[in-house]
Length: 604
Image (cartoon, rainbow, N blue to C red; front, top):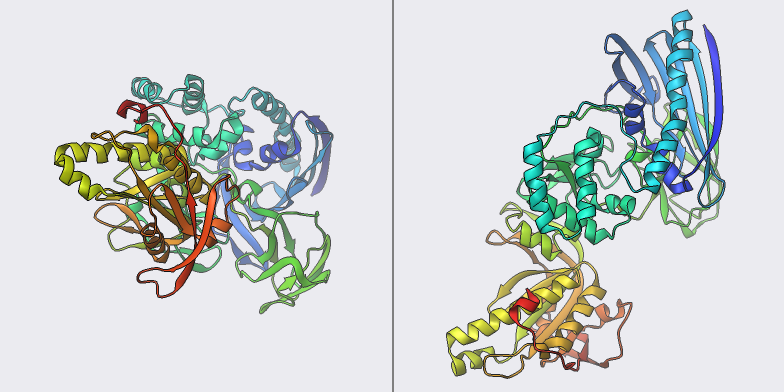
């Protein structure tokens, strides 16, 4: 038995945050470095430690087993992993990667390894295979930096990819006709043809946007249209709200269950459009198939919301040095889910004790020096979790509130018996004033043509401001937005530009509008993804108080606006039918701006 210690460092041409993302995607790097794919057991306690059992065939023929402990890390600083081998000429492996910013564009990366071998074969394997593979991180970083600066796909493992070229070419032509930016289409096609399996499954449009210098909504439009063209396949992932790892997946909203169980956290949780359901994209299997092989499952890249994660041995105390994280965060114990709220109003203390019943305090102030005493007879995993949701996640709440998604995938609805909490949405109702009289004056055909023109105009403005029309009711419209400012700006633009439309009898349209923000429930209403709840009722009642050429909204929603424009504002209180109390409201009178008359083709 013997030990080999390895250390090396280099400066890489990547900003710190990008270097962290590069280094922590250990599943992709292990594939690139020609490591073998691995089968992992679920995380569990064995002999007092939190582990996964892993097995693989080295070089495809030599069976190997090991106990893999959880990763430890501090975001943008370091991560490490330990393995104890059960059936191998190696006994133990511990390696650590540390990052330190040199300047805004460069990062110093250091790799440390501590290896124990059982015999001469293990020593040779370490010197000639394992350590050279670990050193490959520096070559990988150099290639990654080149790809990053050229906005191309990251370095890929040598993998035999079989692409159905005729199918790809035909569907690529369709996407070019749908999407106006050919360079962005070609970048996606390049990935679908040449990237490894892990890079063409579970794709996130917002992450793609960040990596390719695109606007988020441009990338989302690209992915949705690529799905419509048959290049991609959409997939709903049901995420655990604790560990934020997908637990179930479905290609349709109809197949989503109300409640999902997470084995890792030991909880059942109810689906929520705002956080529990995310859309990801895979290459369409008609283009190429993906193996789904795993090379690593525990790395920080799989838990991007965790700022820091630490192993605390049984019956011991560990002193932690934590960065001064400005992000809102909390402390949690993996699997047991005991939580400590962390903010300025908590107790001022730098030590926490943990027992099987939980922490010694559940609300403390942030601390950079923190000692954790584990009084359990088993190891615990102490985590510092960011409260904000993953910025790369495309939630069902956001996606189903976009007009393009509803236009392309109108059949995406829940099963008829489901009701799912959505979270905060802003609901906007509009109504065409005196439309009944218009039908009497000019007849059904002309009046209906006017109403359709007005619908097209509303849809144009609502889509422009990142909202969607949920349904039309007669000549009224119900629309939703994920952002109250977008809803407000859309309403103001509608009223300001309504003079650009003209009715058959030459008179201007007059539109009544009302809006309110709050939580809603998503349901299937006659095979339509619809929303119900008090927020919807309030918005509908508020709209009934509109006089036309104005916008009425609850004062609570008005207070949430970031920009209110220079407009005439009147506050008042009024009873709303069926609500049972007077509500404080705001009426905004919007002057029409003289515009060139629009034709239907202008607003299509």
